[in-house]
Image (tube, rainbow, N blue to C red; front, side, top):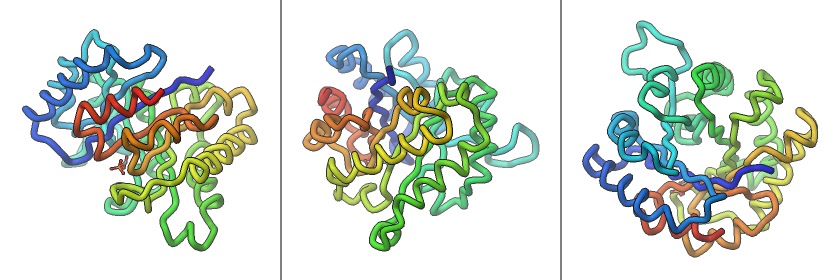
Length: 251
Ligand code: PGA
């Protein structure tokens, strides 16, 4: 059975002390959430070590928001998957649309990043999603299929045990415009079909597919009620512990 997950993506928000306080508040509120719902917080790289201390021994897991496409060496400013793992983090987000859009993240780089993340024992939350232009041109299925397979073609069914997909339509991120539950379910089911074709029905059935894009306590219930939506990747609403946990309580 695939796992339900609610993951918070803090993006470039909070100072270290603020992040530590937020993590403490999430941990404190996490007891209310049903045990079968996994909770992950993805913090800026500067926050990973102190937040790892906060979440240690709790049910809250820790994620980076990115890692490098190179193993180590002369890559000033980059943070390797080994470094992320050494903080105590168990996950990294990869391929967020903001990284694709503003930092030249390509599918080829994502293959390298995913390989290094898995080799260092990290789980990967791989983000896919179409832009508004692509949706209006009715290319969203093709775009999402290409983003998914361009990366996952390099991985095995065994690797898929450590990979979660996050479908995040770019037009819904930070805009207040959520995909309707039906729109999201349609593409989640499609992604599961793509996974079934590539890896077989069992892997497809076991893979967690999260929805992201203006998910909040008021709309999470309807989204999470859909059979192929296995939780959420939460941006803005993850910056308030009560909202983040409120979303997790929608299960
Ligand atoms: P949002 O961001 O919830 O603020 O729309 C989601 C994301 O980008 O992961």
